[in-house]
Length: 192
Image 1 (cartoon, helix red, strand yellow):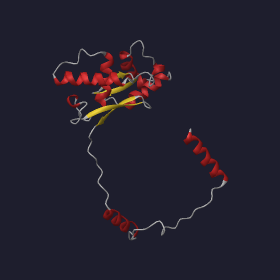
Image 2 (cartoon, rainbow, N blue to C red):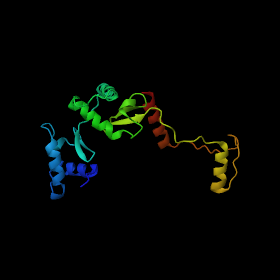
Image 3 (cartoon, rainbow, N blue to C red):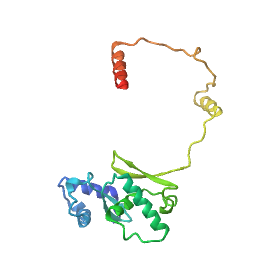
Image 4 (cartoon, rainbow, N blue to C red):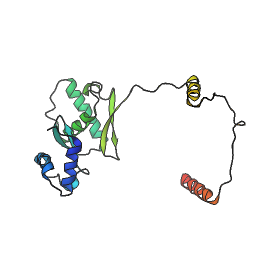
């Protein structure tokens, strides 16, 4: 049976809420065999989480120490460039490696080109580490005036015309009491 992260996390949330069933028992058994003394079901998704990589479940812990993550990634890059085994890295470093490898773009991001072609960022909201390309090619093309004119003609048949502010039909309305109150509140916040 192929493991999917969504199924594994679903089983974890059920276990966290003390809901056990035969359907999730095999997943829970696999996870519990990997849990250490500090892993508690109540702490799932807050202090630890799961990743499914290469058909295997890995327990990971959030890491927010930017300096430690960066130095770990530099060390891993150095070791890989020299063909040195990663067997000697600490469990905390292995945790980072697992999280990063889940986000690497195959063939583009390698340990050899860390800090040259790609890096990482910490998402404080979701408590995750993400990879990012430094010079990612843009998929956007420059929009020209001809493209705008053509698009308008195709959309509604109208012709594109240059216009000035005087030609525009501007209708200014006085602020009502509610709008003034909201505007003043905005100004107070802005000036703090």
